[in-house]
Image (cartoon, rainbow, N blue to C red; front, top):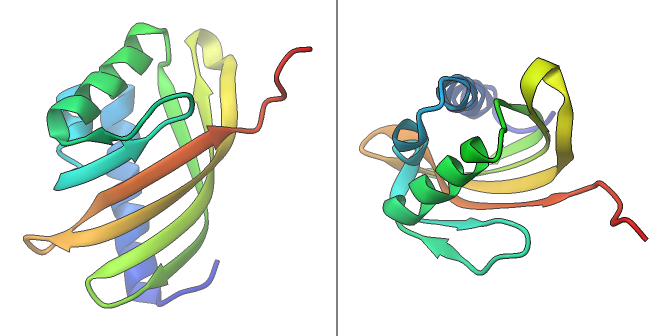
Length: 130
């Protein structure tokens, strides 16, 4: 992983909060991890803008049986009050069954002194069935 040590540590700490909030089934808490004007760009969807839309998307993941979201940060680069992150994800259901896995890019932004997700795009690495 490259980037400044302080920014990396801050992003990794924010990511741990994100994962634990998801595992508790707290979609509103997940939305609170995003900036007020955030955009989520999930696969097979248009831009989702704003906290209510982001909360709804994460609630839908939870309603589909996703119990855990595991994130692995590969790279963090800081740019003052912004940072970029590249990583891998796994979505797990009951008993740790992997439902999906893939990669993501997040642009983080400091808002009120806290690192929050500002632009979040991810897609699956699971091949499409033929």
